[in-house]
Length: 412
Image 1: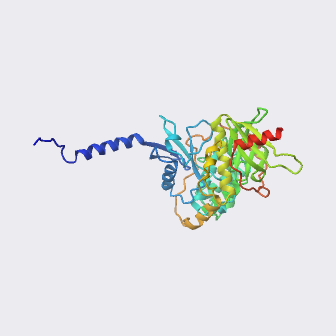
Image 2 (image 1 turned 90 degrees about the horizontal axis):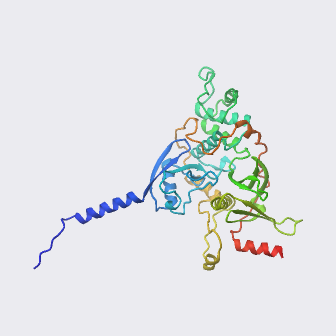
Image 3 (image 1 turned 45 degrees about the horizontal axis):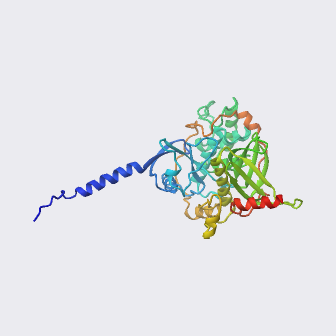
C-alpha cells in the first residue's frame, strides 16, 4: 500500500478561519457618524450590506423607537448635492472609495405638530436638530423668536431662573445663533425668568411648537437655476414644493396642485394641475447643478410626498412590461409613512424613558458651507406657511415617455 501524508488534525479549519478573517477585514468599513449631540461615533459594518443595516446599528446605539423621522446624510458629498443614505442599496455603492466615511445623523422628516411625536426622547432629538440648524445659519429666525427658543433650551437644561445662581454672564458659555447681537444674552435671560415651573419635557415641547412657525422649518433646500438662469433654491417640505430667491419665498406648490414630478439629465420638471381658466397643464422646468443633484431632489420629493400624504407606501410594480418599458428611476420610498409612524409610536413608544441631556455648545463643524450673517438672514424670515389650504393626493409615478408624448401633443 502506498503511504499518504496527512495534515495535522484541525489545520484545514485554521486555514479557512484565517481566510474568512481576512475577507472580513477587506469587506468591513468604518463609518463615522456625527450625532445630534455633536459627538462622533464610529460604526463598523460590512460594505456589502444594505444601507438599512447601518441605519439599524445607529438607531440601536441611540435606543430610538420612533426611527422613521431620521436618516443618515452623506457628509462626503459636495454641498450642491444633498444625499441621504439609501436603505435599499448596498453601502459600498453609496460611500466614496479610499476616504474616511463620514455621515450626519439628522432629522429627515419634520412633523408639522410635535404632538405626533409620542416619546419625549424623540422630541429631544428634534430639539437638538433645530439647535444645530439655528447655530449653523441653516434655519433663519427673527431675533425675538431666536431669544425665545434659546430661553426654552436654557429652561430645559438649567431649570428655573434664580437671581442667586444665575448671575450676569451665566449664558456666556452657550451658543445659540451665529454672530449673536451684544444684547442677545440679556433678552434670553429676560425670557428665561418667565418660564418658572416648566419641566424639561414641556420646555422642549414649547421649543418645537415655536420652531415649527419658522419659514424654513422642515424645508430641505436644493440649489438650482430657473429658465432665466437666475440662482434659486427649491425647497421640499411636508406640504409641497417651495421656490426661494435670495432666501425669500417667491412661489409655493402644494402637493394637491402637482400632477407629476420628473427629471431628465440636469433638468427637473414640475407639472401642475390645470386651472379652470387654463387650456392645459403648466410644466415648470429647472436646471440643477448635475444629474446627481437633480435625482436627489426628485427622490426628496417622492419621499416627502409618500411620508406625509399617503397612509402607506406604494407597492412595487409587479407588471413585467412596466419594468421593461419604464424609463427612468424606479425608486420608491419603502419606510413607514407619518400615519404609520404615529401609530407605531403609540404602540411601542416608551413614555417614561430616562435620558441625559447634553448642554448647548458650538458645533463640532459647520453643517453648511459658508457662514451667514445673523442679521441678514433674520430679515429674510417673514411669513409663516399656512397649512390650511395645503391638501394633496397621491402623485403619479414618474414616466418620462408619457411626459414627452403629452408635450408633443400640446405643441400639435
